[in-house]
Image (cartoon, rainbow, N blue to C red):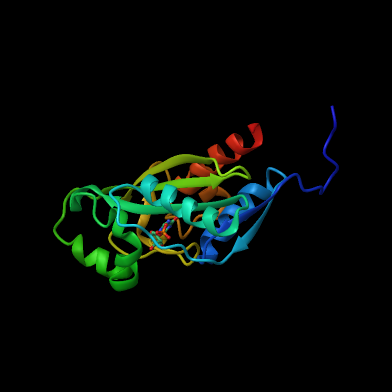
Length: 194
Ligand code: IMP
């Protein structure tokens, strides 16, 4: 059996994203497994769909038809129970328009503050076959913004079992418990087994 030399990269994988926060998280996670993640900036058109999985499948197909090389992407969202799952698949649009203060305003008077982050991570391989893996992180929406790390809704999301918000946790800990960390860990296992 061949052992990996220290520092040797096993796989170099393209990750299409314009979000530097996501890129840092996914690079750190794959680095820990000996793989290198390289950013590809080529925003694919997001289809209107009810699930993250449909968005990822369509995005991978679009990128494959253009580049014909293996690529990873993800789609994610914050689903707040007391707001009937809002902003859900509209999380990116809602973040651009309302951001964290807008969500806190929507939550005024709402008693059920439980929520979950969901992520679907996808990979299209050299033969055009797609592999999708999903991850969930349950938690709750706190009453104010806390922390300066991370990105997006991190300052208002307290993961279950933690006393720090996503924006207060270090990246390594966020990767262990987060929706994205879980989805990409499972995806990395699936890719390595190919
Ligand atoms: P998309 O996956 O790029 O469509 O992002 C969906 C929206 O959810 C964006 O506004 C992100 O900022 C937000 N989002 C996704 N993942 C996270 C996360 O890990 N922390 C905070 N916000 C997130």
